[in-house]
Length: 98
Image (cartoon, rainbow, N blue to C red; front, side, top):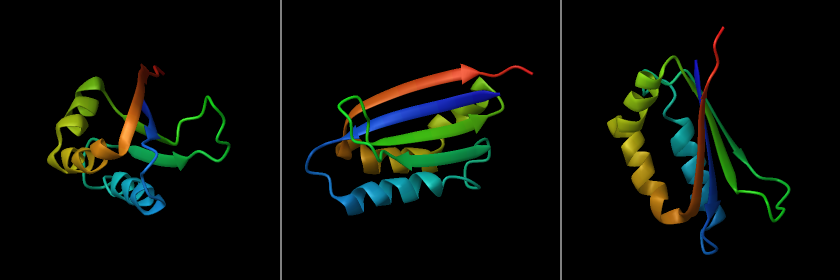
């Protein structure tokens, strides 16, 4: 299993409505992108200097499935929506064997 974690920092001018819309659009991919097994989106509640604003946690059966998700047209539409909203993006993909 592949776990895909992404963290974003929003630009200062981004509204709360846009943040919530990004969250909604990401969550809407479950059931639409066949290779996406699970997805969870969280908003930071601490606001420390080390914090990012939003995190995505998702699961896939394989790297190929993650790549299929990354290139899926519905995922790409979501990416185009939020690309102008963020100033930082950090990603970790790791494999769980078992």
